Image (spheres, rainbow, N blue to C red):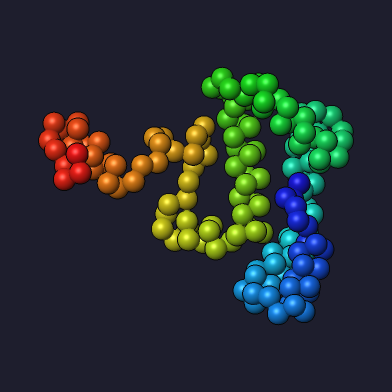
Length: 149
């Protein structure tokens, strides 16, 4: 359930980069991710596997995740309701676990700023626009002109 590269590959990459005198922060980051994976163990992977096995029957985590992905692609959780809520909760929990191992600084910053995103259908309630574009759109709504309009 972990995204590649795995801890062993990251450690090998870090050793090779260090021998070649590569970027020290990159080496440190690869080692830190590998260490966090080792420290957290496989208990959470097994919890996710069991949750998926409850839905699909026994199998390895990879095959169960493929079944889940197929179900999502087929639109099984498109309609609002309990099934969708449970799926979003499962995916959000899985995402937080991955972030805890791969980018804990993001989680700490989000917690610190209270800007932790909530799970939802789309990444943003509206498309991302630049500040200048936002000002231009607001001017259009108010019927005024901007310096670049």
